[in-house]
Image (cartoon, rainbow, N blue to C red):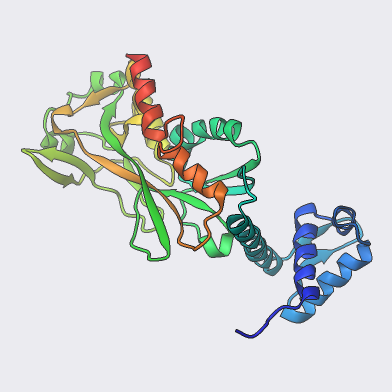
Length: 318
C-alpha cells in the first residue's frame, strides 16, 4: 500500500476538524496550542490538495461549505476510528467516550429510544449523544451516523442489524367517532368507515393494514378522506379528535386507550406487529461507545433495554 498522507497532511486534517467543530480558527488554535495562522495554512493546504473550498470566511462569521461539511464528517469519522483502533489494541479505553450519533424515526424515537438515553448517559457520562429524529433513510458513510433505528430493514451486507422488538399494532377510534358511526365488527365493515391513511414518504403509497384472521397473516386495504405522511403520530392525533379509524403502534396510543380517549377495535383480528431493528456499519473496529449503547438498548447491558422498559411500564400501569 502506497503512503497517501504524510505527517503534515494528517496534522492538517486534525486542525481542520478542530476548526470545523469550534467554528473558529482562533478557538481551534488555542486548543491545539498553535497560532491561528497555522490553522489557516493547514486548511489552505487541504483545499489545495482536494481542489475544493472548505470554509466560507467573512469578517463576521465562518461556516463550512457543503463540500466542507461532507469532508468534515468523513474526516471526523476516520480520525475517531483511528483513536478507537489504538484504544482497542492497547486496552487504554476503560470507559466509553466521544460523540454517538443516532438516527431514529419519529414515533420510535419519541416513545421508545429517547426515554432510554438519560439512563444511558448517566451510566456512561463520557459519551455525548446526538439524536436525529427523522423518517428518512440516512447514509452512514456520507452523514457520519453511528447507529440508526429502522422498522423496514433491507438486506445490506455493509450493515449489522440487531433486533430491538416487535412493536404490536392496534386499530383505534375515538368514542365520539363511534357514537356517530356503527362500531366495526369485521374487516369488511371497514369499507363503511373513514380509515385514516398513512402514506410512505418514499413512494406516496398508503400502507395496507395488517391483521390475523383464521390463523393467517393478511394485509387489508382501506380507504378514507384523511391521509398523513412521515409521522405516524399525526394519524393518531386525527383519530383522537374524531376523524376516523386508524391503525397505529400500540405504544403510541396506549395512554389514550387507558384514559378512554381512544377505543381499541377489531381485537379479534389483532396480533400483528412490525419489527424494529438497530443498524450500524459492519467494520472491524466498532467503537466502544457504539458497542455499549447497542448492549444497553437490547438488554445485554443493565438496566434492561427497550423491551424490558416497555414491560415494566405495562406492569406498573396494570
